Image (tube, rainbow over all chains, first blue to last red):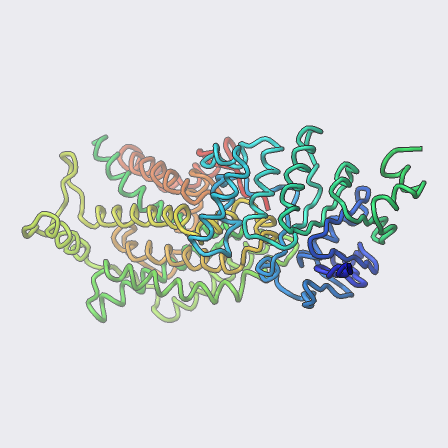
Length: 240
Length: 307
């Protein structure tokens, strides 16, 4: 029996990115295949968030190409990227001044009225804690609940690729576990993930790993291959 | 006397809310300070004046014409001015300078076009519209004249201005809290960076808010001949200061706090007029300073949007 080769969903080729005159990323190549989960590991200031922002066109791409499902999207507007199925979950995870329901409605901005309502009800079923507090301001939720809202808001439009910036930031170990468990559940629904993290716990979700050091890709491969590398083991797993 | 001042203050307060509403909406959504706000109000007043003088159009239908016309003007004006501002290092400060310049240009061009003489619309024109509307509700003809409220009589033009202003506040509330574009507008107000990352077309949202802001100023302008006395090309600056006082009292960054700020301002103003009339004109400046020192986020205390 022959296995089909993985089909690339997101491809970054030779990406150089920066803020005005300050370059942050140099010649980054990265691929996320369809239905694949990729974790991007790196220390603070290594350029993880900038890389994710480059995928969403939130920072200027100086050089290189970004493709999504074979289409060149390097110069595509953010709303067009979202319509094509790329969503970005930032560390802030939503709009604290708006209610939970309003946050979800904003996540569903590109769905027609009836479909948006159906999808919101589906996500309420998946996240009962949000359903119970649908009229409450998002700002009144705990850190972990805010992450759940961020995930629900991101998933409401049935994206093909979910990009997450440090989903463990500010969370207790218990909530980190819950976020991982929720993401595992949605991964089964053919969702591809690109997660920037410092927390190696998220590697349980990873099909492949990239490490980013000072704006350049250091390592790329499977978690098993990473664990065989002594330097990476010491840096990311704290093992001798 | 006290009850009269309270009621008159409430009617004027509703009108002051309308004056501040557009300015606060623009500030809340794009953190741009439109110092030409009062000049757009003045243009709305001149539009109503000419519509009445040349075509005998009553001020009430002129409200719809002014709003639609200025929203249409506001959309391209947004794309011409604001996106460039927002790309700057310090857009708030730059907006002060740019819109101050625009204010001066509008005032100078209007002065060249219409001169400096004071103009007004006869007060009974609004009363006539109130009488017609009241007649529709009552089922019989209602005479054009002063309106009685709780034993006190007020010019019908004050009542009409108050009612239209209250309706404008309600419509802005419905827009922000009951429409899809309104949710998106509040998302931009809440966290602009997150709104952009979520794929919201921020410029479309801001352009609509800018158009509505200017449209509301023009609507307030239609009532200016009745509520502020005569109209002149130079009235814009003073109106902008009043609008600032109202939105700072209510809550900077929260358009609906403007209604609260307007009513507080209106009642304070009328009480001052009744008991210490020579101090009444100092009131906006004193309130501005006191509120900024004691409660910079306004009496409602809502936080300013984090950009």
